[in-house]
Image 1 (cartoon, rainbow, N blue to C red):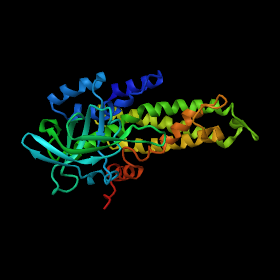
Image 2: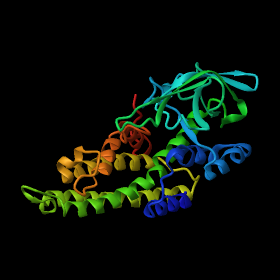
Image 3: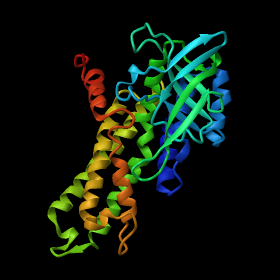
Image 4: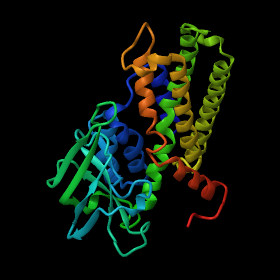
Amino acid sequence: PSEHLIFLEESERAGAPYVGVNFVGLLHAGPTIATEGTPEQKAAHVPGILRGDQIWCQGFSEPSAGSDLASMRTRAVLDGDHYVVNGHKIWTSHAEVADYCELLVRTDPDAPKHKGISWLIMPMDTPGIEVRPLQTMLGSSEFSEVYLDDVRIPVENRVGEENDGWRVTMVTLSFERGTAWVDQIVDSIRLIADLAVVAKKVTSRSGVAWEDRGLRRDIAHLAAEFDGLWALTKRGVTEASGSSGVPGPSASVLKLRYTEARQRLMDVGARVLDRASLARTDIAGLPAQEWTDDRIMSMSFTIAAGTSQIQRNIIGERILGLPRER
């Protein structure tokens, strides 16, 4: 985890390209297989993920199972040395170009909903898979629906024991909520510095934006909050490095506070840019496109990887020791 943190931090500060289309492989599936997979699974997938030879997508959410992920219905029936899978996944990032999918299936429909789930590695060229792209507010199509019709997946592609997939999923989500936000926190610190520079250039009838004491106070609060989030990130990675290598429930604190702070940062940016914040092209030397696109994207951050409400439940139950939600 520490080396992962250093790599993401230095890549972002150097302006290197983001992991992009393979963020699921590098930040979710790869670490999960490295932690929970068999030696054969690690050898088959971890080197390819690191080289960029294997692109991965995530088959978790379903139309009726988003925040309540354990309500998923995609069914896997054992047939000899294969599982036969039928179901429907949604919000699957980059499924149209992926080589593999980290797939959650229900292997025991009679077990309590958290107990009858298994975590499978699904090759995306397997017969019976149909991918239908979905268009976002930005006009892109990185999300897809994935339909599974009698898809046969070898039993050897199961990560962890049968019906133990929920525990493996918690490992995956810990990585997703922990180190997966590192580059964006570093990027946010850069954006705050950029915003201060832009605010000194933007003028309106009331004068230069930077002369607004309330605006300066809000930017200062954001700078302090993101410094704190960065310290929390490093502490979480240090704790993971000294134990199982898996981020703990404190990753939910990071995910909750970061995503809400990022939305506030985008709102302050819109105040500075004023009417230019409505454009998706740069205007009069102002970086309107980056801020407008980022603001639209940030709206989904408190939903993706578990809603803010889910994170508060995790924090309350697993960190504060409060009674479980009924």
